[in-house]
Length: 232
Image 1 (cartoon, rainbow, N blue to C red):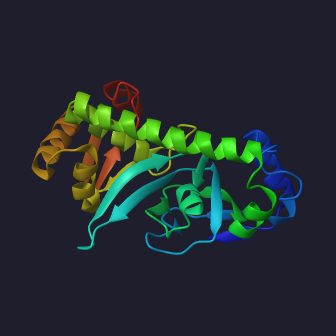
Image 2: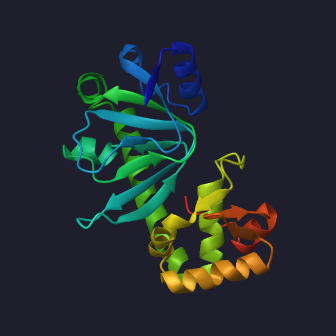
């Protein structure tokens, strides 16, 4: 994660996402902009992080790791999203790992400056409330999606989420087959059944499986199959 010394770019993102009244003038000197490359972690489960991060560009995935070392993807996030909000409020270590799946830009603010200049301000508190309640809403929607749709629809939606960013511009267009067990866990099916569905989607010409990767071949067809219900 590399800090970008560019106040104009920070102002740009604040304006784009209508955050000027949230992070007021007193906070401005303490805002930092970071660039995170695909595959790089913004924060890791169990770490003590003293920053609140605001995702302003790109896509990240959120996952948890069991004591056996198994990863379970929980969600994908695009702007506008806050990373570390629950940890900030509760004063606890990072709950889940957050990893970039595209080139990502986040604005970081140290907790000490939030406590000094933002905590207690109605605009900031309302902002945190909106962010946290939105997370509950998205999680409820995701659980319903898994229960109500067949595996092929869930897989199509998952592939769209990991392959494309918020502007529908291609990131990689492919998924490493080594992560298929994680995929099965995420969409709520067995590894064996997932492979059967992948084979069917290959036969339908939507994807291709070769050389250790699943490659998206037909974006529009996959989007139609997913019923536009993308895991976000």
